[in-house]
Structures are given as C-alpha cells and as structure tokens.
Length: 161
Image 1 (cartoon, rainbow, N blue to C red):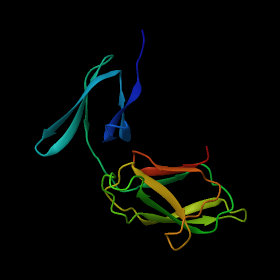
Image 2: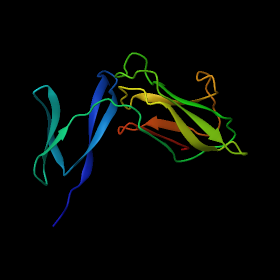
Image 3: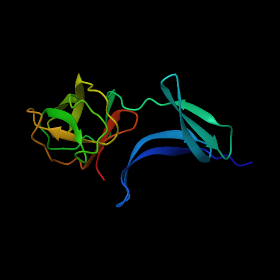
C-alpha cells in the first residue's frame, strides 16, 4: 500500500495580476483535494478533504505572538544587538503589533550565541521580515546571515543560503 503524507499550504493572495502570494500556514494532510473554512459559534475551522485518508478538521489559530527563536546559523562579525520584525511588503501584512524584539549576545568572533526575549509582540503572520539591528533597534546590521524569516508556527529562524 501507498501512504500519502504531505504539508498543504494555506495562502493569502497578495496580488492576482502578478501572482504574488504569502504562505500563512502549513498543515499536515494526506493528499488534500479540497479545503474549506467553516465558522461555528464564532470560531474558525479549516476542513481538509483528503484523497488518501479521512477528512481532517483544524482549529484556525491565525496570527500569533512570536514564541520561539531559533538560530540555525549564528553568522559572524556581529555586535550585541536586537532582533525585530517588519512588514515585508508595506500595506500587505496581516497584523503584527510591531512590538516584538529579542536582544542577542555574541562571542569573540561575532557569532550570535543566545537571545533574550524582550517582547513577544502579537498578531503576527509569516509575512514579516526578520531584522537584525544594532542596539537602537532600528539600524540594520548586515553581516553574514543572509536569510531570516518568521515561520508559520510563530517562530523565526536565521540562516545563510
């Protein structure tokens, strides 16, 4: 027998003409062939109709606070600073209280060694860009980490591509 397990995406269409979209959340499925939004007593659910399994029902959480910070690649040549979030495309972001920040510490080579939560912020979806800044929290520090993104699970990750 074959087993079909994958991650299906819930997306937001940002611009139909250009085909620009943002992935909001990934959910496990078994060959999803249809997804529907259902509201019951003011609570939103996503119903997934699967090709290779029974239907699945998920409670839609939507936007969230940033709960975890993962540094997959610590980079180099940084000085102690802050990690903040900003909207990737002004005017198209879904929420975000603009209050999230973490401070970070570095070792002698400038690699990020730890982070300390300052504020979890609120109402974030994965359409915000992660910024590594100087201690003022506004001036970007562009050293060796080339990718940093907010994950759908309200965590973010830094790395190099």
